[in-house]
Image (cartoon, rainbow, N blue to C red; front, side):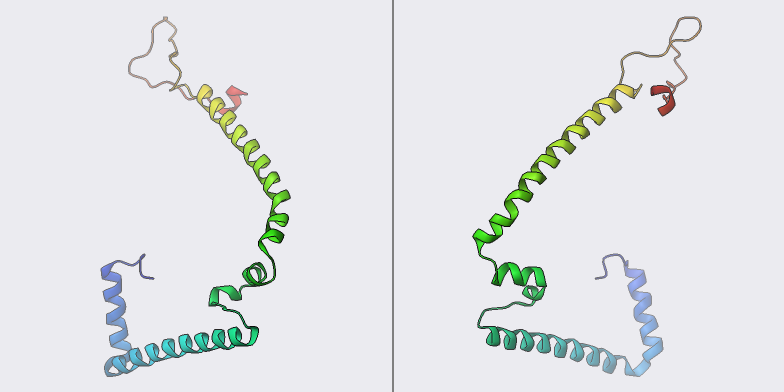
Length: 142
């Protein structure tokens, strides 16, 4: 939760909370913790009641409509029958994208002058030693 805050920012927030709430800070913290505990208990009770009513074991994550349908209404054979045509299309698309990616890498490598063994020559026929090789632009390549 606080992975993007460093210790100075957390300390500043605690100091700000102390200045705002003063002597009431411990009471505010305990009220907040009590509210979180009550919310967890209500969620646990609701899932327990729903499990009893439906006659199955339901977790809080199962209340998402897709997960509920997948777990309680579809059998594994039904799910595989639904996935099979989509899986073949996905595999075909993935192989096409991989091929295009490899071709683009080849073109980029061929167009990059730094990876080519040839160095540009100067007007006198020698290679420049102190100046870097100019980079080709997209318009020069096409």
